[in-house]
Image (tube, rainbow, N blue to C red; front, side, top):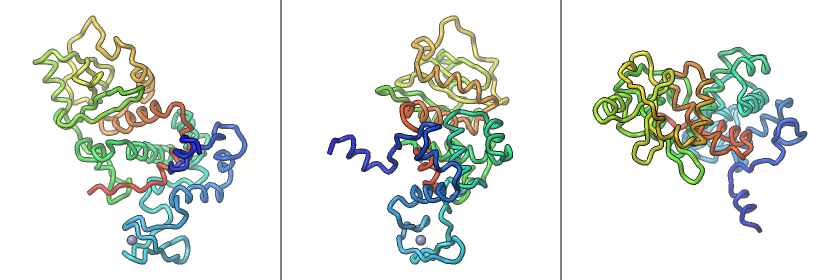
Length: 308
Ligand SMILES: [Zn+2]
C-alpha cells in the first residue's frame, strides 16, 4: 500500500475529495438532511463506532430513554454531544454543517445569519465555538486555554459559558510569529505582556508599529514579529514613528500579508478574543491546500478540555 494511503487511513479524519461546494454527494449531501448530518457528526464523535463516557472514557454505556446515555463506571448521564464544542449553540446538525461551509468561505456574520435564518447571537456564539475548537487543536492549546491568555475564563466546567476577563497593560498577552518550512506558528510568548513591549520600545529601541489596536514589533530573537491586541487603556501615544518598515513588512512575509488583510475585516476585535482570531488565521494558512469542512466538523465534535 502506498505510504500516503496508509497515512490517510491512520488519520482520524480522512479528507473527502468531493467537499468542494456544489459537488453532489459527500459532505454537501448532508446539508439538507438533518438525520444524515447527525449520523455523520456522531461518526466523528465516536470514531470507533461505539459511544464512550465523555467524563471518564469508559466504553460500557447504557442507553436510557430519550437520547440519554449513562456510563457504567462513573454513572455520568450524558447526551451524545455532551462536553463537546458542538454542544455550545442551538444549531441543528445540518445547520452546523452549513455554518461550517459559510465559515470556510469567510462570509460575514450578517451573511451567515441571513443564509441560515438564525439570530445574530446564535451565529456569533456558534462561531466562537468553531474558533475555540480550532485553538484547542493547536499544538500549544494547553498554554492558550490558560490564565496566561485569559481564555480559560470562557470555559466553565467543560462548557463554553463564561465571559471575558478585564485586561490591562500588565495582563494583555504577547504573541510571536514563527515561520518553519512554509508553516506559521502564532505562539504565546511566556512572561511577556503589552507592558514588556512598551518597556523594550522605550528603553531598548524595539520598533513598535500600531494599526488600530494591533501593535507589532520588529524582528525579535527567532520571531519575525511580536504582537498584541490592545484596548483603550494603553499609552499608544508613546509609540514613535519610523521611516523604515519593520522586518515582517520589509520581507513581505506571505502569512503576514494574508493575516493583515483579514485582521482589518475583523473590526473591533477585543484583546480577549485576539488569540482566537490569530489561531484561526494560523489554521487557515497552514491548511490552505486542504478541504477544511471535514477537519472543522471533527474539531467541533471533540471534547472540550476541562479548565481546572
Ligand atoms: Zn464515566
